[in-house]
Image (cartoon, rainbow, N blue to C red; front, side, top):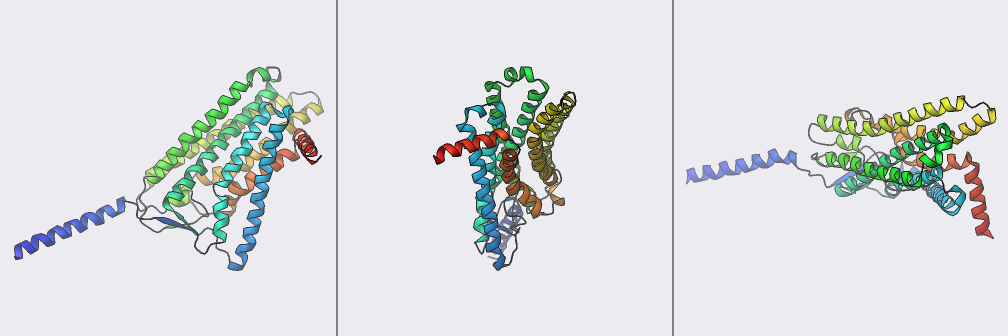
Amino acid sequence: MDAIHNVSSYQINVQNSVLLSSSCNITEVTEFIFVGFNFNPSLEYFVFFIFLLLYILLLSGNILIMLTIRGDYRLHNPMYFFLGKLSFIDLCYSSVTVPKMLLDFLSDRKTISFNGCITQLYFFHFFACAECFLFTAMAYDRYVAICKPFQYSTIMSKRLCLWMVAATWAIAFVHSNIQTTLTMGLPFCGPNEINSFFCDIPPLIRLACTDTTMIDAMIVANSGIVSLGCFVSVLISYIGIAQAICRIRTVEGRRKSFSTCASHLTVVTIFFGPCVFIYMRPSKTFQSDQVVIVFYTVIAPMLNPIIYTLRNKEVKTSMAKLWGRKNK
């Protein structure tokens, strides 16, 4: 009997050892808690209304640009074709994070399920990557318009524009799948507090209960190829544009060419600056800077329609005519 008892005890101990050793290879966390914003209860409603106003401005501005471009045949050219797609991506990009953030301001526990977190991460990187490559396409469009004006209509055909947009979505799909797959492969055994207001890779990797050095390097490399590659491509395009503008003899010609590109260059700088700052470093060195995160997730998509409409006479004129017809 003692022998049988000893064998049974040994089997139980072995099973417990197996369970303990495998517990760090599975994900035990079922939900995450956002701790990025810690306001006093009296301030949460005020901050909620501020962000709600910003989100309404973001939605209305981008929808207005899309309707204006669609409704005015004079804006049916590659430049405004890409601008319309940018407004759509901005609308989707911000809608991945902002509505959840607004709901959390009204909740006592700011939580999200594990599957919901992965879904949010996937679509956030999908639309962010699509925006990166769309900015690159827009820079190439401006390069051809200024450096090769007589060949512009031939080079920037409708077929090429559609292919460029299709490539943008395809690359974003691949990039987002790689990022999400690498993150999902990590075990999360606790803690489950994310030092942000949405699910993103840098703060999420810090919660993994395993060594993330290799995965971290792969994720940084993937993000670096996208963000830095697109930024360098845009920079090269604008170096060529600057050289072409300097060769224009008339002051009015230089002013008009520069004005055409200034809006796009401003928006690109606003977007890529925080993006490179956040994702071009290992997650272990990540310190949650909520100002930077809010800027590139909420403020930048809201500024795009404002910058393009304030600096573009054609868009402002088309908007005035569009709303003038609807008010009659």
